[in-house]
Length: 79
Image (cartoon, rainbow, N blue to C red; front, side, top):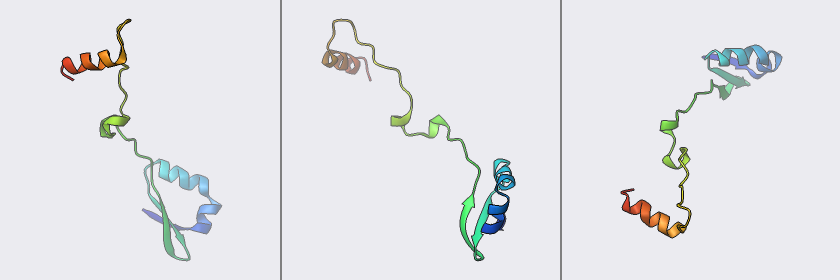
């Protein structure tokens, strides 16, 4: 981890972003005290997302079935 004063961040933000993109964490200091950490983005796998955020297949309704009938049919099928 590198620690840089805010003035160094302002002076050379592009190269600091390059460091972060390469996996380095950079701590930003203001008046010698840490105020922020720049960390690389970490991809969140779909499996770690809550179930309500995961993609799902749409429900296909039979041509003449009502929504209530489709729900009852899904329940009977063991869902």
